[in-house]
Length: 103
Image (cartoon, rainbow, N blue to C red; front, side, top):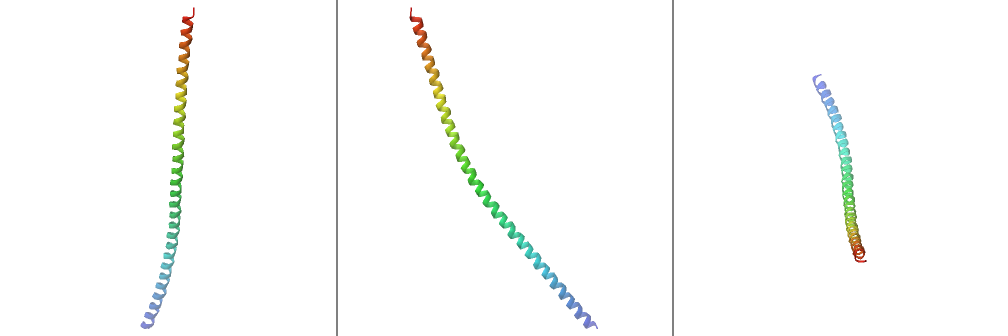
């Protein structure tokens, strides 16, 4: 009877180890699927980051162009304003000169 008990225990152990092996394979498969999913998400995030980097670069370029244009416009307006003030002063001087010398 001892041999039959040993054989039964041996068979039970084999069944238990087989179940444990299948559970381990399932766990490995599940973890592998999660790893693949995370890698795909990481690749997508990386692509998004690269895309946003390009977009930021484009927007910075546009901003720099607009700032340069704004500076040029401000410079032209400033020059025009100075010219008008200068012309106005010249006109006032001419007016007063004529006013004072006309008698």
